[in-house]
Length: 193
Image 1: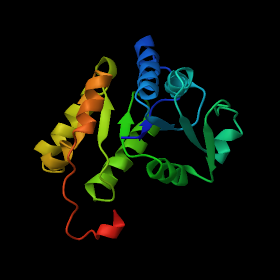
Image 2 (image 1 turned 180 degrees about the vertical axis):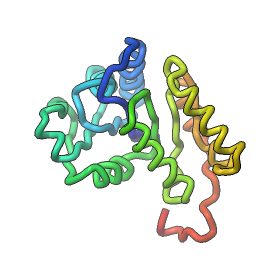
Image 3 (image 1 turned 90 degrees about the vertical axis):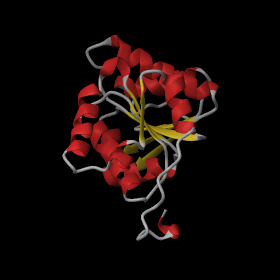
Image 4 (image 1 turned 60 degrees about the horizontal axis):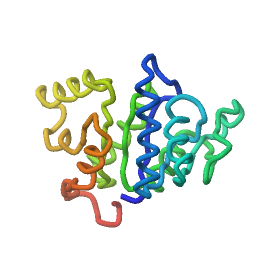
């Protein structure tokens, strides 16, 4: 993986471990020469993951919708800042710039971005490795809910198993590097991937 999109919160959360782990992820990206693609903000753990990469010489591309630039939450010191017309264009651009996806703790927006990318994977629209950095067990309830979706027949276990989960950054990245995507559905044409 040369470029990973990170979805995460625009708040720092109630526990300082979320911000420190986000910074460490950005630092790890820089040391491994992995480009960070993220939402472009200077606030919350979004800002921390960017700072971790930038402080350690990493390349960081922020992608932010125009209306959020008006609130002056964008990070001025990025390698590149791309401004989109709306949230949907933002997600598509983030996808296009990346070859892997990681979710850190966050709120509704983080979940929405993550699940859209997960759905695209399920449909065979991309074959990127998808990871959850489960800092402080933050996503344990969500993982339990997804397991219930499998148990109740709404999600196939194969699709659940496409998500790599770990609390350790290095191990998560190793799992993502070793990921073997599911074959594309037969009704998806090769040029649609």
